[in-house]
Image (cartoon, rainbow, N blue to C red; front, side, top):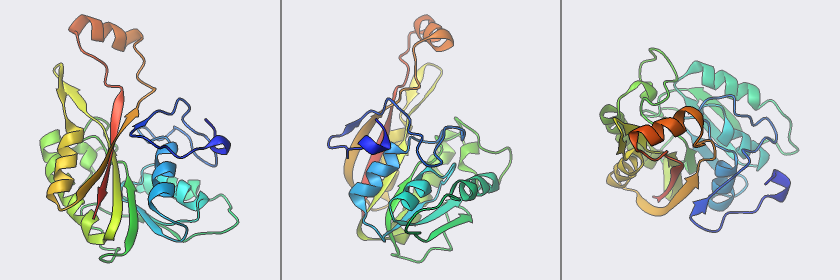
Length: 240
């Protein structure tokens, strides 16, 4: 599927066999999601002129889609390298330039954003410490083991609810992990934290991961230790 042949998803199972490389999208930022995900979320749950927030901006995927689709956007990341990369990738020209702001900041404390001011949140937090995005940045959630991560993600959820307008939506892409051969249901644990913070659960979307191939090292490990490769992520859509 290319952007020119794009069709909005209509069910709760999403599968994109091509990553999507239009505009300045690429896969160079480790762990970033396919642009088809924020494109679907943005088009379904917001309108031109709305303000979209991604407080784990990473490689800028959400903000690029906002710029392409006439949405104002706020991007936040605790890692200066991510802020610089996102700013660079937003350098392309569009006919109607929305207001795009990128800040270095902490998703737990979005001091630059007023209460009830955001129309949509579309974000992709780290999966605890599965991929570490820094060595020692204070507040970096990717440095935390699962138990500590979940405490902080509930703080993130409360901050999401503070900045989001009533009746609007918050979409979070998250996956599970495995340790010592056992699945650790990080996705559903994160979902519960957002519900506990006061959100209503609108949708649970299953997204297929096409980069999980049963070949080489992982195939032999799966067979030897009798475990299945995790080939899906969740997109939880919450409503305030």
